[in-house]
Amino acid sequence: MIVYDKFWETMKRCGESTYTLINHYNISSGTIDRIRKGQGITTAKLDDFCQIFHCRVEDLITYVEPAPCGCGQWCGC
Image (cartoon, helix red, strand yellow):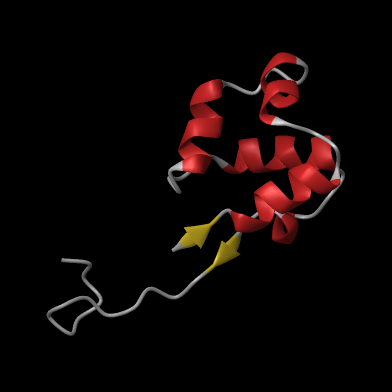
């Protein structure tokens, strides 16, 4: 599963806010909402954020191995 914790840290470190992303860089509020909810975004958007923040993808997202669900499988039920 992809987590966006580093995105928020990087945004703050770079002195940006969701307001500037939306109003200055034309990032849609829907994209910000998807990140807040931990949903997927496109690699094109990741590229946009890397350009805005002058960072690497690793500064935005992390892959975390999901834990087995209640049935003992990796199915997410």
